[in-house]
Image (tube, rainbow, N blue to C red):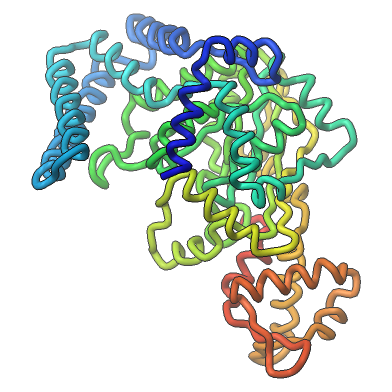
Length: 468
């Protein structure tokens, strides 16, 4: 609760006109996109498109309106059910939400055609569009560096080739730039944003799933330039939000407005966290939208591969549980940071690497094959992954034990012989981490270990591999 109060204080402080003016004048990150202007411009474009029989016809708008009415009626019933038997502040909050939904239903029922489209697109943009505050970003970084020092101090920004970061810095704000990263944890955007900011690079817009918007995260994420994409069900396991024609086109046009104004983006082509540890085959939806943007505007864009690696994967245990069908999308950003910081404080070396690769330029005259290009990008991400002590020794342990018949133990000497090029310090750190996490345990003989959880070792061993 103390941390939440501190965040609320920072949110209030960051709205100071004097502080915002200083940040917008001197800081790397500035208010580049005016949210109100963005919402007005995107809504206007959608209405013009509707008027000229473009993407939206009457049928698409009618379908989106019907879906929204169904969604709101279901939500209203749930809220009324929750309100029964509650009291105090919780009851007042639920009553306020119920009243807002009832008013929205009454308004939407009366609207037709372009008025429905205007209402729906504005409603969706309120969720989608970030409300970036560069002053809050600076304050949040400063407080996080103290409160979550173990995690923040573990982050390393590195580059494949000398001069890479300077080249990316030159492009940012002048041409559309897209950071492409592997997806390991719900917290991935935090080490990436910290690393980019330390390198004095502009913070990109981050495309994040709505499952991250929980608790105080709903206040923090929009302020640090996170754009919400609802990938979950709109109508109870029947229709997803991405099946709503107005929602998906509003999201697409929101992004294209940002790209026209050279706003950099960060997204994860895998779509979700890898459950096996391997880099998943990319989903090409957003990259296809970028290609459409290139064809339409005849502008060049740049893709920057980012390779993320952790000595301690934040959700390793939870990710393994998810393979058994357990829901692991819970907890807000602050809870994740508290857990991460505690975990990282247990070990001597928990480096988190963000490797920046040279930009890949795409032009309208030489537009590559979408599938091939997307897979090549993720292969470059794989190639840029820096090995951590855990990434390095996990495959060594598994290979060593696979060599023997149902062998479930090993010695440090066997490990040294199996990996003569492995740094002894790294080996010791990796063994200490795996022992503390109870993936292995000391054996009966001095210098020996027994494997307790081979599935978790596989997860770490797979982190430098692609699943395509």
